[in-house]
Image 1 (tube, rainbow, N blue to C red):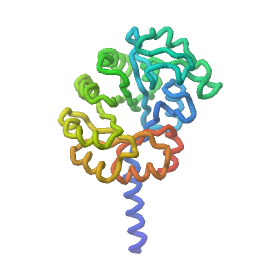
Image 2: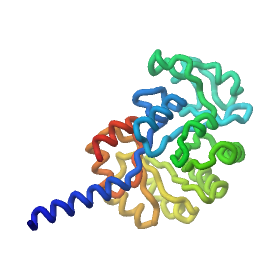
Image 3: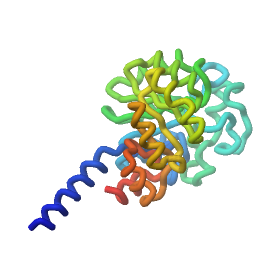
Image 4: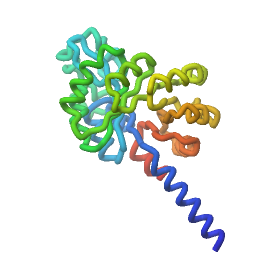
Length: 255
Protein backbone atom coordinates (compact mmCIF):
# COMPACT_ATOMS: atom_id res chain seq x y z
CA UNK A 1 0.00 0.00 0.00
CA UNK A 2 2.83 2.41 0.91
CA UNK A 3 4.55 1.78 -2.46
CA UNK A 4 1.29 2.40 -4.32
CA UNK A 5 0.73 5.62 -2.40
CA UNK A 6 4.25 6.88 -3.18
CA UNK A 7 3.83 5.94 -6.85
CA UNK A 8 0.52 7.82 -6.98
CA UNK A 9 2.09 10.92 -5.42
CA UNK A 10 5.04 10.75 -7.82
CA UNK A 11 2.71 10.56 -10.80
CA UNK A 12 0.59 13.44 -9.53
CA UNK A 13 3.69 15.61 -9.03
CA UNK A 14 4.85 14.86 -12.57
CA UNK A 15 1.42 15.59 -14.03
CA UNK A 16 1.25 18.86 -12.10
CA UNK A 17 4.76 19.93 -13.12
CA UNK A 18 4.45 19.01 -16.78
CA UNK A 19 0.95 20.44 -17.01
CA UNK A 20 2.28 23.89 -16.13
CA UNK A 21 4.75 23.93 -19.02
CA UNK A 22 3.82 25.91 -22.10
CA UNK A 23 4.61 24.46 -25.54
CA UNK A 24 5.46 27.28 -27.93
CA UNK A 25 5.65 26.68 -31.68
CA UNK A 26 8.91 28.16 -32.98
CA UNK A 27 8.07 30.32 -36.01
CA UNK A 28 4.91 28.25 -36.13
CA UNK A 29 5.08 24.52 -36.77
CA UNK A 30 8.30 25.13 -38.66
CA UNK A 31 9.46 21.51 -38.75
CA UNK A 32 6.62 20.76 -41.16
CA UNK A 33 5.62 24.11 -42.68
CA UNK A 34 7.56 27.18 -43.89
CA UNK A 35 8.62 29.25 -40.91
CA UNK A 36 6.92 32.51 -40.00
CA UNK A 37 4.00 31.99 -42.38
CA UNK A 38 0.26 31.86 -41.86
CA UNK A 39 0.41 28.18 -42.88
CA UNK A 40 2.92 27.40 -40.12
CA UNK A 41 0.86 29.29 -37.56
CA UNK A 42 -2.39 27.55 -38.46
CA UNK A 43 -0.71 24.15 -38.42
CA UNK A 44 0.73 24.83 -34.97
CA UNK A 45 -2.76 25.41 -33.58
CA UNK A 46 -3.99 22.21 -35.21
CA UNK A 47 -1.15 20.35 -33.50
CA UNK A 48 -2.10 21.63 -30.06
CA UNK A 49 0.47 24.35 -29.45
CA UNK A 50 -0.18 26.59 -26.43
CA UNK A 51 1.40 29.54 -28.23
CA UNK A 52 2.99 30.49 -31.54
CA UNK A 53 6.21 32.48 -31.80
CA UNK A 54 7.01 34.73 -34.77
CA UNK A 55 9.80 37.16 -35.65
CA UNK A 56 9.19 40.69 -36.87
CA UNK A 57 10.98 43.38 -38.85
CA UNK A 58 9.76 46.75 -40.07
CA UNK A 59 9.67 47.28 -43.84
CA UNK A 60 10.71 50.49 -45.58
CA UNK A 61 7.08 51.69 -45.53
CA UNK A 62 6.66 50.83 -41.84
CA UNK A 63 4.70 47.61 -42.23
CA UNK A 64 5.42 44.85 -39.71
CA UNK A 65 6.61 41.77 -41.58
CA UNK A 66 7.01 38.30 -40.10
CA UNK A 67 10.45 37.02 -41.04
CA UNK A 68 13.45 35.85 -39.04
CA UNK A 69 16.37 37.15 -41.12
CA UNK A 70 17.12 40.81 -41.94
CA UNK A 71 16.99 39.80 -45.60
CA UNK A 72 14.83 37.48 -47.69
CA UNK A 73 17.52 35.34 -49.34
CA UNK A 74 17.26 32.16 -47.23
CA UNK A 75 13.50 31.75 -47.29
CA UNK A 76 12.60 33.18 -50.70
CA UNK A 77 15.71 32.77 -52.86
CA UNK A 78 15.66 36.48 -53.70
CA UNK A 79 17.85 38.90 -51.80
CA UNK A 80 16.09 41.95 -50.39
CA UNK A 81 16.88 43.71 -47.12
CA UNK A 82 13.57 43.94 -45.29
CA UNK A 83 14.15 47.40 -43.78
CA UNK A 84 15.05 48.86 -47.17
CA UNK A 85 12.23 47.26 -49.18
CA UNK A 86 8.59 48.26 -49.59
CA UNK A 87 6.11 45.75 -48.24
CA UNK A 88 4.47 45.53 -51.69
CA UNK A 89 7.70 44.08 -53.09
CA UNK A 90 8.23 41.77 -50.13
CA UNK A 91 4.72 40.39 -50.58
CA UNK A 92 5.50 39.31 -54.14
CA UNK A 93 8.10 36.81 -52.93
CA UNK A 94 7.48 33.08 -52.52
CA UNK A 95 8.21 32.21 -48.88
CA UNK A 96 6.91 28.65 -49.04
CA UNK A 97 8.66 26.68 -51.77
CA UNK A 98 11.96 26.51 -49.88
CA UNK A 99 10.23 24.17 -47.44
CA UNK A 100 7.97 22.16 -49.72
CA UNK A 101 6.44 22.69 -53.15
CA UNK A 102 2.97 22.29 -51.69
CA UNK A 103 3.53 25.64 -49.96
CA UNK A 104 4.49 27.44 -53.16
CA UNK A 105 3.12 30.97 -53.17
CA UNK A 106 3.01 31.34 -49.39
CA UNK A 107 3.74 34.99 -48.68
CA UNK A 108 5.84 36.75 -46.09
CA UNK A 109 2.93 37.72 -43.85
CA UNK A 110 2.07 40.99 -42.26
CA UNK A 111 1.95 40.61 -38.48
CA UNK A 112 -1.75 41.41 -38.58
CA UNK A 113 -2.35 38.27 -40.66
CA UNK A 114 -0.63 36.11 -38.07
CA UNK A 115 -2.62 37.79 -35.30
CA UNK A 116 -5.86 37.01 -37.13
CA UNK A 117 -4.83 33.35 -37.36
CA UNK A 118 -4.53 33.08 -33.56
CA UNK A 119 -7.64 31.53 -31.98
CA UNK A 120 -9.32 33.65 -29.33
CA UNK A 121 -7.80 33.05 -25.92
CA UNK A 122 -4.54 31.74 -27.36
CA UNK A 123 -1.13 33.39 -27.14
CA UNK A 124 1.20 34.94 -29.70
CA UNK A 125 4.86 35.38 -28.80
CA UNK A 126 6.39 38.21 -30.83
CA UNK A 127 10.17 38.36 -31.15
CA UNK A 128 11.31 41.84 -32.07
CA UNK A 129 14.28 41.49 -34.42
CA UNK A 130 14.61 45.21 -35.12
CA UNK A 131 14.69 47.95 -32.47
CA UNK A 132 12.24 50.19 -30.64
CA UNK A 133 11.19 52.04 -33.80
CA UNK A 134 8.68 49.25 -34.39
CA UNK A 135 6.77 49.85 -31.15
CA UNK A 136 4.26 52.51 -32.30
CA UNK A 137 3.26 50.33 -35.25
CA UNK A 138 3.18 47.23 -33.06
CA UNK A 139 0.84 48.97 -30.63
CA UNK A 140 -1.55 49.82 -33.47
CA UNK A 141 -1.66 46.24 -34.77
CA UNK A 142 -2.17 44.75 -31.33
CA UNK A 143 -4.90 47.24 -30.51
CA UNK A 144 -6.71 46.82 -33.85
CA UNK A 145 -6.43 43.08 -34.43
CA UNK A 146 -5.53 41.50 -31.09
CA UNK A 147 -8.81 41.50 -29.23
CA UNK A 148 -9.29 38.41 -27.00
CA UNK A 149 -5.77 37.24 -27.79
CA UNK A 150 -2.75 37.16 -25.51
CA UNK A 151 0.62 38.69 -26.42
CA UNK A 152 4.11 38.11 -25.09
CA UNK A 153 7.14 40.05 -26.35
CA UNK A 154 10.75 38.87 -26.50
CA UNK A 155 13.99 40.41 -27.76
CA UNK A 156 17.76 39.94 -27.58
CA UNK A 157 18.34 43.68 -27.21
CA UNK A 158 17.86 44.59 -23.55
CA UNK A 159 17.03 48.24 -24.20
CA UNK A 160 14.44 47.33 -26.83
CA UNK A 161 12.64 44.85 -24.59
CA UNK A 162 12.75 47.41 -21.74
CA UNK A 163 11.11 49.95 -24.06
CA UNK A 164 8.58 47.29 -25.05
CA UNK A 165 7.64 46.72 -21.40
CA UNK A 166 6.99 50.45 -21.03
CA UNK A 167 4.83 50.41 -24.16
CA UNK A 168 2.99 47.24 -23.10
CA UNK A 169 2.99 47.28 -19.27
CA UNK A 170 0.23 44.68 -19.04
CA UNK A 171 1.99 42.15 -21.29
CA UNK A 172 4.80 39.83 -20.32
CA UNK A 173 8.19 40.71 -21.75
CA UNK A 174 11.26 38.46 -21.72
CA UNK A 175 14.89 39.14 -22.50
CA UNK A 176 16.49 36.60 -24.83
CA UNK A 177 20.04 35.48 -24.07
CA UNK A 178 22.39 32.77 -25.32
CA UNK A 179 25.46 33.50 -23.17
CA UNK A 180 25.66 32.51 -19.51
CA UNK A 181 28.18 35.21 -18.56
CA UNK A 182 26.17 37.95 -20.25
CA UNK A 183 23.10 36.63 -18.48
CA UNK A 184 24.72 36.79 -15.04
CA UNK A 185 25.99 40.32 -15.73
CA UNK A 186 22.52 41.57 -16.63
CA UNK A 187 20.08 39.66 -14.42
CA UNK A 188 19.93 42.40 -11.80
CA UNK A 189 19.23 44.97 -14.51
CA UNK A 190 16.66 42.69 -16.14
CA UNK A 191 14.79 42.48 -12.87
CA UNK A 192 15.05 46.22 -12.11
CA UNK A 193 13.66 47.09 -15.55
CA UNK A 194 10.45 45.33 -14.63
CA UNK A 195 10.82 42.51 -17.14
CA UNK A 196 8.93 39.32 -16.40
CA UNK A 197 11.66 36.81 -17.16
CA UNK A 198 14.30 35.49 -19.49
CA UNK A 199 14.22 33.07 -22.40
CA UNK A 200 17.51 31.23 -22.78
CA UNK A 201 19.05 28.89 -25.32
CA UNK A 202 18.62 25.49 -23.68
CA UNK A 203 22.32 24.59 -23.72
CA UNK A 204 23.23 27.12 -21.02
CA UNK A 205 20.48 26.13 -18.60
CA UNK A 206 21.69 24.08 -15.66
CA UNK A 207 20.80 24.00 -11.97
CA UNK A 208 23.01 27.03 -11.23
CA UNK A 209 21.44 29.18 -13.94
CA UNK A 210 17.91 28.10 -13.02
CA UNK A 211 18.55 28.91 -9.35
CA UNK A 212 20.02 32.34 -10.14
CA UNK A 213 17.10 33.25 -12.41
CA UNK A 214 14.59 32.15 -9.76
CA UNK A 215 16.50 34.14 -7.15
CA UNK A 216 15.80 37.29 -9.15
CA UNK A 217 12.07 36.44 -9.25
CA UNK A 218 12.19 36.00 -13.01
CA UNK A 219 10.37 33.37 -15.04
CA UNK A 220 12.48 30.97 -17.12
CA UNK A 221 11.71 30.00 -20.70
CA UNK A 222 13.88 28.24 -23.28
CA UNK A 223 14.48 27.69 -27.01
CA UNK A 224 14.71 25.74 -29.36
CA UNK A 225 14.13 22.20 -28.06
CA UNK A 226 13.28 19.29 -30.38
CA UNK A 227 14.52 16.52 -28.08
CA UNK A 228 12.15 14.92 -25.56
CA UNK A 229 14.84 13.95 -23.04
CA UNK A 230 16.22 17.50 -23.07
CA UNK A 231 12.73 18.91 -22.63
CA UNK A 232 12.15 16.71 -19.58
CA UNK A 233 15.50 17.79 -18.07
CA UNK A 234 14.57 21.44 -18.49
CA UNK A 235 11.15 20.93 -16.94
CA UNK A 236 12.74 19.46 -13.80
CA UNK A 237 14.84 22.65 -13.54
CA UNK A 238 11.72 24.79 -13.48
CA UNK A 239 11.45 25.97 -17.07
CA UNK A 240 7.99 27.46 -17.60
CA UNK A 241 7.84 27.33 -21.39
CA UNK A 242 9.61 25.42 -24.17
CA UNK A 243 9.89 26.74 -27.70
CA UNK A 244 10.09 23.96 -30.29
CA UNK A 245 9.92 23.42 -34.04
CA UNK A 246 7.79 20.31 -33.37
CA UNK A 247 4.98 21.32 -30.98
CA UNK A 248 2.66 18.39 -31.64
CA UNK A 249 5.39 15.75 -31.49
CA UNK A 250 7.06 17.17 -28.39
CA UNK A 251 3.77 17.45 -26.52
CA UNK A 252 3.07 13.77 -27.21
CA UNK A 253 6.52 12.83 -25.97
CA UNK A 254 6.50 14.62 -22.64
CA UNK A 255 2.87 14.58 -21.50
